[in-house]
Amino acid sequence: MLSKNAIKRIAALRTKKHRKETNQFIAEGQKLVEDLLLSGINIKNIYHTAALAPLGLSKCVDVEIITEQEMKKISGLTTPTPVLAIADIPQHSYNETELSQSLSIALDDIQDPGNLGTIIRLADWFGFDFLLCSKGTVDAYSPKVVQASMGAVARVKIVEVDLPQLIGNLAQKGVPIYGTFLNGTDIYNESLTQNGIVIMGNEGNGISNEIEMLVNKKLYIPTFAKGDLTSESLNVAMATAIICSEFRRRKV
Image 1 (cartoon, helix red, strand yellow):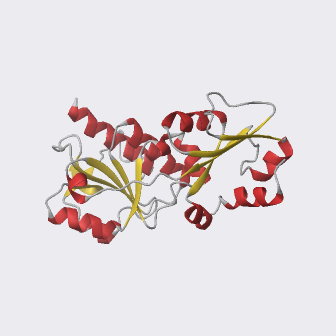
Image 2 (tube, rainbow, N blue to C red):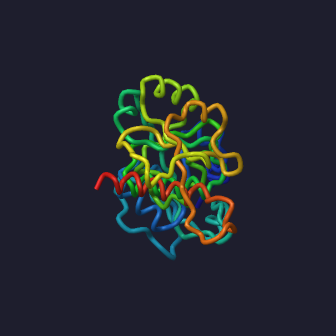
Image 3 (cartoon, rainbow, N blue to C red):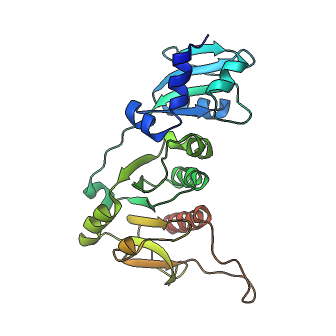
């Protein structure tokens, strides 16, 4: 049986402040929890109802059976799943030399949790080395982002950075800094390197002026629609998928 203090402690992990204080996050759902177990991430606790026991549980994980009513109290979902886990937030380090020699994605104030979760999955799928998040980007370990990432949050090196300062340092060293703009070069006709930083901008405002000044390789994703009437723009997660795919296609 969960104590009131335990319920309060788990529920508090839905706030960014408490996640940072405890260095822990919540994951809900059997598939998601099993993916986290396989990833090797440090899982502290698993709670599940008697209706379902997650597979492949490690003996070192603290597993507790709770009632459906207790699950409703700690779950953030409208329809709670039978499994909830608490895991440690991975701590990833980096250096500018490493970044200059690899291919990474940088996010300039992405706000939508669904978009961020999808971008994390894309970084995982296409093997990008780091996901660099500006301080204004939504927390990568919020429940909605973790849910949307489908376990990829445990496999991608996600780092919160001072984006203007970091990009400025890398640009000064001649590192390719890519970004998408309406006045950019057609991505299908541009030569693409297998190192550098690919910047994706905010859903409503795009790449900020401060960051745009540091971009040295502007790209454009062309439309193939017939006629002048077409969508105004692509969703940032869709654009990220196209860009990641094109970068990796050049590597094949």
